[in-house]
Length: 494
Image (cartoon, rainbow, N blue to C red):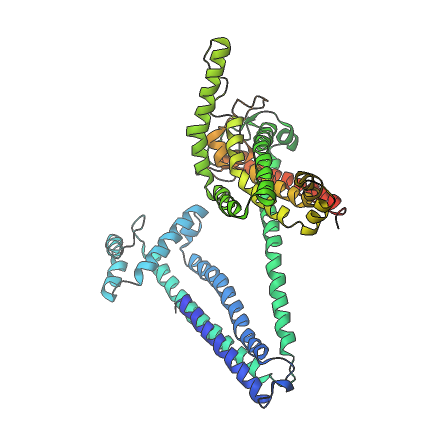
């Protein structure tokens, strides 16, 4: 049975359980809701929970565990010479078995006999069924594929029986436990509370999983390359090793990448924060409702443009424009029309990234400024302050914690940007202060180190995880510091 059909049947059982639960609760109460501890809807929800949650948990566990057991059994059926091969070769063999198993579901009994008779014929028959495999299927592959199909079919039938039986048994168990004074509401609310706790824990568990996965690989990198060479090195030259090599030759200095990340992010914030904040102040305090209803959606359209489009814009328009205008300025000043701004440079990437970040600062700051109580504005204006004085001395201080949070979110967005930097600032890891020269960032090098058919056994690839965990730590420190600032200023207005 298809999983979608099984889920549909479970949904029908759940709806039926809810209706039966409501009706049974009303029948036990003699049609008098006042004699019941909980409303009939809670009784129905209680029965629905017992019908769906245990069966859904069993279904999820079955879908995870069953393939592991089946795959292990199929691997055990391989001949000893196949088991002695490297893991990569065994994976290739198992992939062929899976493809053959998919083709066996389409062959007739006569064709099945031909499959076992001749490998070349078997390959032709499978190809006629739309199944392409790398080589001629061996007899043990046909047997393993048949075993895979049989075990999968048995597992599927058993899963359907157990899941449906659990759903029905859970519904009957809950129906038998209903009574007029049964505290169904308390039971249902406990389940809802557990679901809310689980949902709120997903973000924390996801963060922990990401950090642990990066730490595991980063630890292997630091076993090959000393930490002080990575954190305090001023030269980035990884020198990719051959596949399968663990050669640690090369220089993995973080300083040039970190400097490029902070430099480009700083230039972007210089563009985004003033423009975004001033536009938010204008739309929140000065613009008419009609103008606000038009300008704000148009400004937020910028946030929906893919970053690769911004990268093309920087590469084809902003970069050449800055290069040409610098050549004209240099020519007028010295007579030499050589450009002192390269098309790919820090200022190009920072300017375009700042344009991309304007909607984040503007929209978030606008919402924060608008949320400042009206009484603060009226009180300031009533004391004789002008509108600009009210904005400067009342509204902005009151909204400062939220604005700091908006700027922090924007800074995190700038630090994590990749595509604009690749196209507008280049990939050269350089340590310099000239904003008219190219630099690169940590995120760009993470992508470049993981690009291609590489194994995670050499420092040239494992360094990407060290870069990732370093970037995570920097962002975490920024968040902690911003939280401290927000709390410090918020105390003045509570």
